[in-house]
Image (cartoon, rainbow, N blue to C red; front, top):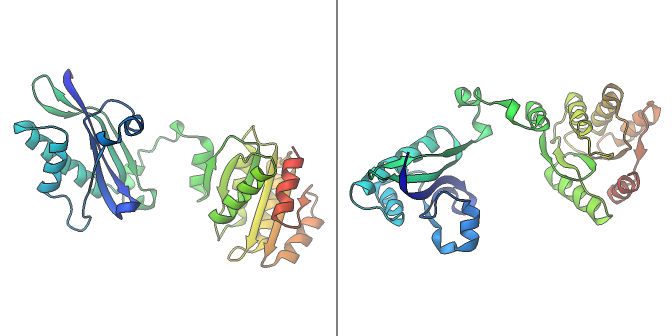
Length: 284
């Protein structure tokens, strides 16, 4: 396709507007973050009422912001409305067209697109999620999603396994406070099973940068003895050969500590979170 103009158009869910917004710019064909940093006035946003859906006034306002007139204006309106309907019907979190172009013949085309889908809607979008190409993803991310683990790889060398996002963030902060760098964010959730704990260890152990593993569990919904059993099984089955620091607190903590003491697994038990972070940094 030969074209004379490149435009930018994206539809995404936005927390600040509690619903979908359309972002547009006449500066298409380039990194939109760079455009926003260089000239914020080049970026235009229009909130869409998710209950009413997109209206012709909405699409017209966006198309006019893109500097379109005449037949191009109405062609763009039609495409914007259909893209919005695609966004809603497929449970997308983002539909990005970069660039949307005006051809030398005056036609409006979507030349390149990126679409992100809400994983929580996979039960409604089975056909779409069956197209997932796991070979294009990090194997750790694939394994984490398979066992309902929340995992984000980082560039540090202390692997973290925690239950609860807030506790995970606090653990990472303390590691950094004491001079270390977390290798990941890994939240096993409030109802983790022994199998999930074992799979979490496999993910951490598969990272060649990990020099120590810190387990920080507050037993509430998930009991400490369940985590302890998972740690012991994982350490035996996965053959964890890096220093393993464990801090447990909460439901059945005494039982869990006894299980660890009686196991043949080399575990450094921490009295509290601060102690655990110091031990993990010192173990490297």
